[in-house]
Length: 256
Image (cartoon, rainbow, N blue to C red; front, side, top):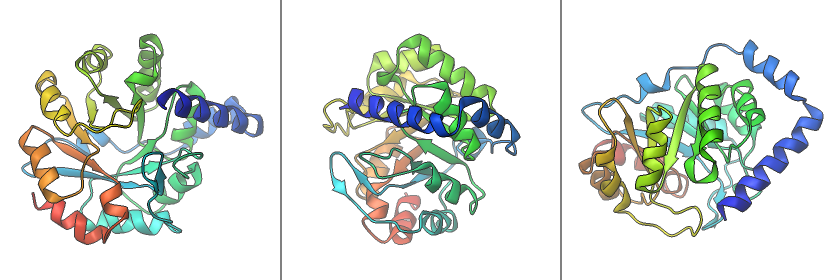
């Protein structure tokens, strides 16, 4: 599934590049106002921090919410206390778009993450051109030289890479490239199976100075509390917010 999603995202980016060539997107990226410092926004604090996600659907759960106005939802997240906003931009299975990210960026003052299956420099420049402050890099989807070069490009453009892992080896690979914002995804993106204990098993491999992000398998405040107890500085939440009352759910999660 991960290979299919990544290949599809790259194909869609190649299609977009026929309309907006790399040189154009690169110029637009460099003209953008500087990215917000996501590492500062997500630094460990007395309470857990939340990255709240704009997410319409997923391959594992199908349609979650229509979200006709992603900007309004993101603005509500910010008012509700989220430290950053994640925007799904993958078109085929998650029904997202770069237009969603641009709309969100226009209304919030906190960091915005482009969450997609990024595997090419073009996609990184697209992210910055659309106003992203963070870009997701999935270790399992990328060979180490590609992961390292994309991480360098993200950083060079003033953004922060959220480097997603799912095993001890992947955590080590993330640290080898100097990642300072590392996510552990409870969902195996090859099988889409969940392991809620995975974060706790891997968190100890992340040294001081690296911001620890727990991803997936979050339905209740108890799930957030479990991640927090296991060492999470930040929890990324999507489905639980978009399928319920987002502000009420967010307030419960932030009270952990």
